[in-house]
Image 1: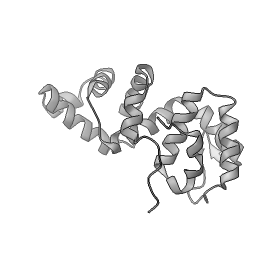
Image 2: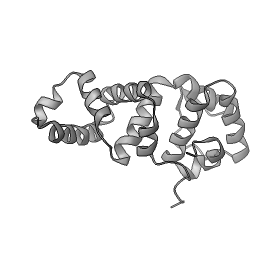
Image 3: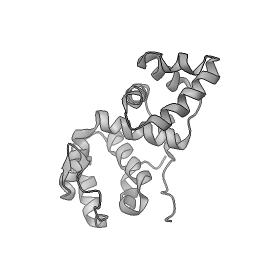
Length: 166
């Protein structure tokens, strides 16, 4: 297994997000049909923290659950990683598509179409990172590239120089 990327862990990236992005990520998280395990973990933590029954937390409106999630002092790495992914899927698809277009990777609205994709060459990754850096805010680019690296450091490791290094 390759070494972990030399960037902040997902939980650290989550804590570094500005309040607006944290809210967007938290709302997207509760709407993500693929996050059932992570949602269950957070529901348990919220219920314990505010001394509510699990059922009461489950039935809370999304905005209220999002606010409770944002107010937690910390989240697990798995939950933080899911929060980052759902944020990008909900709010950064154009940038994701631009990045994959620059790589020449087939995709559907920013989602890689071929699950068996080979890791791109480092030069191609750098070219794609520069392409999105020229068109999108630096914080967005850095967060996206950091998120990619945490998902698969072997495939995306050459992006380290463009990712967050706080």
